[in-house]
Image 1 (cartoon, rainbow, N blue to C red):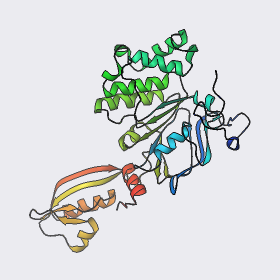
Image 2: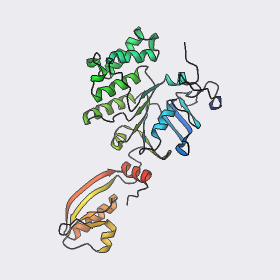
Image 3: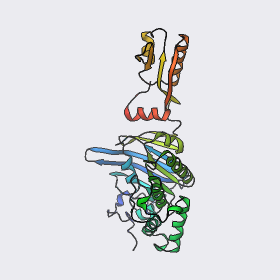
Image 4: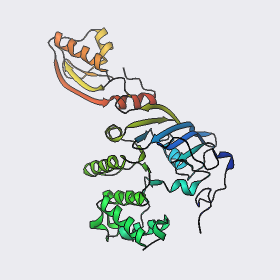
Length: 339
């Protein structure tokens, strides 16, 4: 029996007031994810406020924000698991709340906490999800078996296909989760913290997989890891208190390329009060050594180097730690000015 053409088995009533058109289709075929005016509150708390964005085919977009910014609520609304108070979500031309069954056929979803059946082997687990997705008429069918074989090969899981899911490493578990998301060859992938808990080698492998998958799909991923956004995302959306506070290429959001993170210098004579204030110098407690009290932008850092050189001083430590994206993230989500 097919699911109702409303919310794809979520047990939620139809909401005809959300219909954008008779068949729920949009006009721009390149836009595969379109969120418009999303709002969601929990009692007096506004989790998401007037959130609108698009993700196109061939684009990887990162959803960044501190804990409590509204990322999880946003993802739940995008996949149709949760209704917004206002707004619409359209996936590959289908309204999620009006045409949920067909909208979610275009979607692959990897949650942060992957629900694995630990007693199943990898192949059994994927067979089970192929049946749930209705691929090739269900478990054991030719198309279902071909789909499972395909994702086992794509995700390098063939060697562990007969191993119980409960005996897999965290890296392999994430691969199994991604394989499940890819079974129906979706045009859209939504990934929630996909590299959380992986070791450095696994992280690099997983990022490479995501970049490859993003060539022919629209991918939206949430992450707390700013270097990850810089490495794999074409565009980032920074959320704070339920709103998008910045959007753009991750390498262009910062006003400065880099922010000086730590420095320690030695001077023959104590710095004058103006220099102490201008560079934020504090005593380091070892002779005529001084540390920075706050970050400096690149121009102010150059001035400090000239100041030290002109006085025949020494640079004992000099660390450039925060990227422009990190500085922008801090300023936009904490109200912290980087001077």
